[in-house]
Length: 207
Image 1: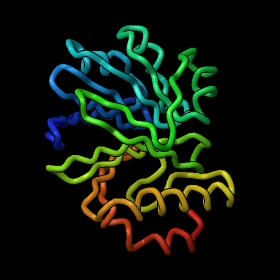
Image 2: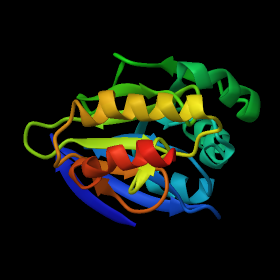
Image 3: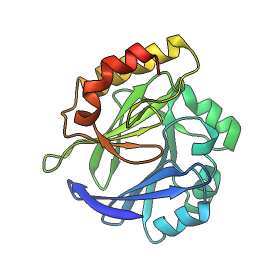
């Protein structure tokens, strides 16, 4: 577990949880906090947020390895849950948690610091990325399973792959600079600059 300052007064704690090593991210500003992906190990996540004002729990997409602790965390804290509009119903059916729906153009805030919501269709219909864009540090993207070091997330068809890579290209690579840090749903961080030279390779190999 690591905690770092990431600009605009926010601090980021990253914790791997569960048998699939899902990354859970906690953004804090003073005593306010936002949790990204209550994936597993509710006890561990509740220890992370103890004493904080949890203003929301964001689920990046509907896949069950990202939602195992959602119901327990929401029940214990009373925090509102958020998810991409096309995935929110599936998450509620799987977990019993009604999510507030967000999509392109929406903004979530923690401690007065805005995070932009970006919808990326293909890994699931309603995957979302949160973008932190401080003036005093590099931008950061919390991409769930839409973008990893070495490629985009798994897709179930050629059409889904094209949709995801197109969205990642136009909404992330075309918008953000090379020093933008990518925080994926599993594994190590990367930067857009590291991945950018490989976009044509990804499109050619089809994964």
